Amino acid sequence: MPGALPDKIILFDSLCNLCNGWSRFVLHRDKNAIFTLCRVQSPAGQQLLARLGLPLDTYETIIYLERRGDTFVDYHKSEATQRILARLPAPWCYLAWLRFVPRAIRDLVYDGIARNRYRLFGKRQECKLPSPEEQQRFLEEIDVD
Image 1 (cartoon, one colour):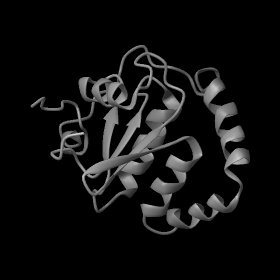
Image 2 (tube, rainbow, N blue to C red):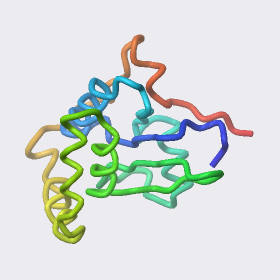
Image 3 (cartoon, rainbow, N blue to C red):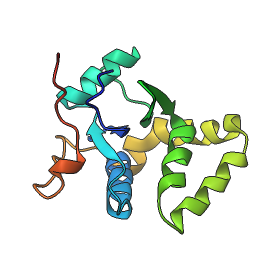
Image 4 (cartoon, one colour):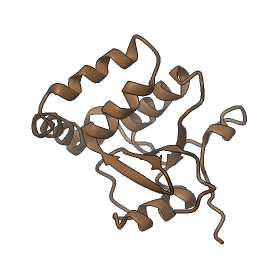
């Protein structure tokens, strides 16, 4: 992935009300603006999914990309959530203690919610675009070199 990308990227399904709620939760609590949000339906989101070898039309997980030197490490499901929480200010960072729950159990709960998220929380008919004030916190396009 190109070096011009932000260091911490959260990919989320912007048609999912739960995913939108999570992204808004992070956006409003990330006062130091360390995270950049990216809708999987955006051109940038589609390019990042393709680079990760993931489906471009089925979204089952939040994905957190974190720069490690010249590359990015991708985290999925509960691991992504835990790593994001750990970087938020108190009291939210304290929820990262849940990482001590075995990943298999965390991901089982995560998968159950993910499979039913549209039924439980609803689905938008169109992507919610960032407001003008939020646009600098969102990755919508990636320059192709």
